[in-house]
Image 1: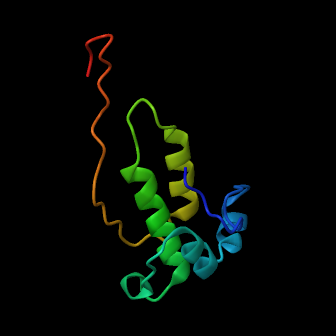
Image 2: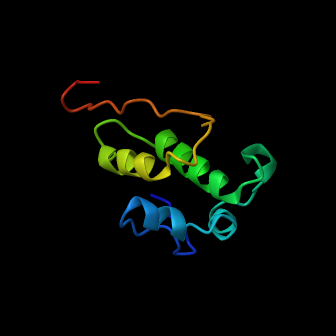
Length: 101
């Protein structure tokens, strides 16, 4: 997990706490080099929640990634997510030793 370098949003306690603590502009700028809020209804907070969820899903590896992290993040973020733009999905990793995909 890449996490937010500003320290404002990584410790999850409850939904209201998490949503209040995210400082959209600071979190976005500390994590991504290009931040264009025009694509997110001019909302830094919406940009953070949508891009964070996109990153988690795009980097999901079946049977390797902790699914609870994705479901917990989705529950905490769902009020701010309007659209997700998936650019890639990782293929399932093949277990060569067992001959299973």
